[in-house]
Structures are given as C-alpha cells and as structure tokens.
Length: 138
Image (tube, rainbow, N blue to C red; front, side):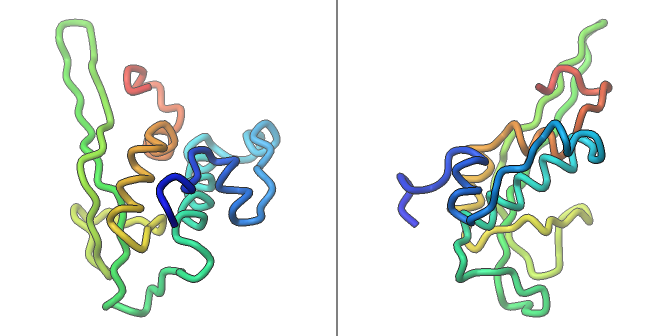
C-alpha cells in the first residue's frame, strides 16, 4: 500500500476493511477506554496489513512487527512528567522483550512504525486507559 493511501484515522481504516466505526458512547458503557483503543488499533492493523495478510501464530518463521515504546516517569517536587514515546519496531514469532507481546502486529517494520507514529493517542489510551495516576501523559 502506498504511503499516501494509508489510513490516517480510525474511520478511514474502517472504510478500508469494510467495517462500520464503533459507537464509542455505547461501547463506553461496557468497555474500558483501553479496550476501546485496542479494538480501534486492531482495525487499523487490519487495514494497514491488507486482506491478504493475517498473523499465523503457528508459523514461527513469519515476522510479526509491533511498535516498541518507552514509558518514562519523572518527578520534580510536586510535578510529575510522564510520557509515552515511540522508540522502534521489533518482530518476534513468540519472544517479546520484557514478557509483553502484542496481538496487534504488522507485516512489516514500516507499517509498524507508521501505526506508532500516526496513532500515538490510541497507543497511549491502550496502555493507560483513563488511569488517573498518569495525568500528564495525555
């Protein structure tokens, strides 16, 4: 897929995969913010990977790329500075550093990088939801 045709929003991803965007107000009644974000990222991954590629979890030779983020927290007096920053993309068949894997994966490093750089707010929401301990991340 050419870079200028890649989805820039969740709604564009829905069009590409033929799904109706979720009604977030209704979903928020039964799902946490992090669950809504993960569902959106799953749709975005489907759109970016295209209909011809699906992760085969039984094929250890198939690379499955996922974004890698740095999560930092600093305290200066009464102020907290927390942030989530895209660092790189990695791939693995079954190994994930720090024991954290992701079923939201991409068929190439370039697509994984694009997803991390284009949708940072969704990744942030997927990691932290509405956790009040991290007010400065958003």
